Image (cartoon, rainbow, N blue to C red; front, side, top):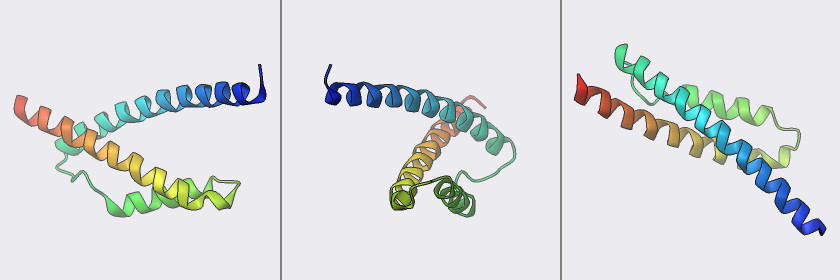
Length: 95
């Protein structure tokens, strides 16, 4: 197996782990949606999102990736908000 194939296998493994982590994050987002509904809290908390982005950037060892992690975090939180909104719609229909 050549180096190119080895790197592809490594990317495949990383992708598998990322998918598992995103799935886990979305499950927690669902629980957060339930909490927000019960406590009349809006889905979007812009201040919290800014803190999360900055915290995620702080985890980097390669600071040339700041903008990528910022963008990745924004997209991930947008997906989480979308999931929360879907969950809230489902909960309010059954209430």
